[in-house]
Length: 270
Image (tube, rainbow, N blue to C red; front, side, top):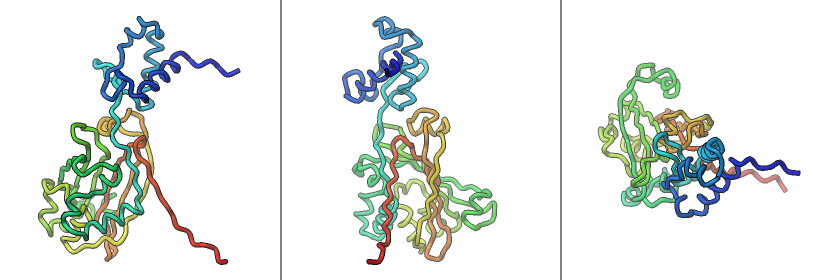
């Protein structure tokens, strides 16, 4: 005989079904009933209902904010990143017509959104290379680096689709002063086209992928529950001269990101 489902779990499942169905009162941004109201309706004790709400929060369906109640979470777009195709497509785009570069981008490719449904936010600063950046770029510790912090969102929703910290050697980027100006973002054609303006062609991109739990700041910005998993992508761009010319550290929400790879294999001799 199967064990009886705990009351809090049954209530959580009931609310989850309403959210999935898009029932009025359970749509993104809607506030769920107060705990005391559910107690009065006989849905369970305060402890039971609180446990149900906490379970729903852990599952990413609601947000519990002290003093503001419990709300159904808005769900930013799911991202499917096909890196083998993505990087090849991005390089081809950079060499294409200006109109194509202006109206297309990798964020749109990943999310399926139209160009006008994506907002880019960028802040630039100059920092000295620490030991990690020194090793990655093969430069001395203290070498000036251009640090570019990016995040993208949809109009009217401050939730970040991802968090990107990109680094270039400042002396190299400064060959084109426009590359130092955050107001030029989003740059049509992305980093490939930016570097092409200073005579650099990217030959290959090396990815390193791992996971960990989100920090509080990351969870708040990405709109995910504290303690959720994030995907960490370390992306290194190497030029045709064999130099590391750009490094990006990307934080992606695990619950909304899918990485897809297709690896062609040699056939056995017949």
